[in-house]
Length: 491
Image (tube, one colour):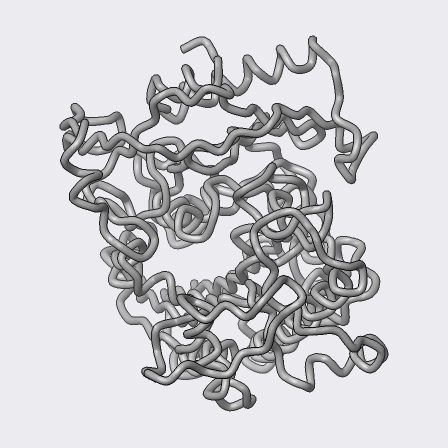
């Protein structure tokens, strides 16, 4: 048995033909849905990028104990468990966060890995002289940090043979062809696209030629994390730049499907296609994610699985509530005949694929220091923290942020050594005070009556029921007591 996982970053469900998207050119996603089980109720868990990948490795939510950070010494890693059991694991990626301080312990868990350079300000091409940058629809050109480095990198990634996603797929497909006759391997082909900046090649913009011919405004391919202040034309241009990048993703997906056909991998190879989260492209008058509520455009994700053990599921829809980021670890381990680690809280999706058997009543999701959300698949309850911040702590043995280490100041004031948590395997951990506090109103939605989440409900009985369910889920995942306090929940 073999498995191929294709992972996109920031792929919006509502843009894709299998989920009703009718204007984005993505025929291979439509083709994919004819060969797989397509999940109707797939939700995120820990947000954003690396927290979702820690979920993927460990099969449990981590956003209640830790912000963005590496795998911890006590974490169970699904790829490493496969590796130790004799399943060869390979990661092919252009996702630069794996090679920063806050992600540096993930890629060594695989037997082998490769990295294609150049995405979103990847510190790659060394150039002292400032690059020329135009002003954009979002304001003057940013001449520092990621934006500056991205401008330096772009001339080195602007051809089909140097486009980072193309290289990632090339490497991943070469792994498949090289090992086509071998057994017991898992390859994770993971591209940073269609994450911002929404940069694609001319060939990917061709389906939207009429828009590009008509637009005469400034570039708008890198929206900021804030409310929308731009013109309607600029918003539409950003949406088309995103759509062109989805079309690029679709073309590479087509190459993977062609490989499955040519090598007849459908006989013995699981295929998983998913994303860590979506992205707001002006919906709810917002850009991006993580600073505002996790609306459906962010939290409700596309998800497809082909399982050769259940061929009748091809072309079928599945309504069971699932969370790929925590469910894929137990699913893949069981596929290869292994048992999930005791600390894994996700579910093996085999019964869902085969018979649409429910595996959970509720799913929780959120970001460290922000809302904690719960859904039953119909209702979404976004529980906000109190307006006055209450203490919150990072529990870790790996004190790193996204791109740097915790500062001496952070580690020299109020830090304690916490007793072991239920999932740290007897290891005490640092308990580090955090100032992170994202406050916004608590909201409740009925997705059946209001799929666009435009009319928040005022339903005290429903809110009380979901509040009880949320508290029960927090206890199930061993949330620290201060999370109950900050959310106003009974501990």
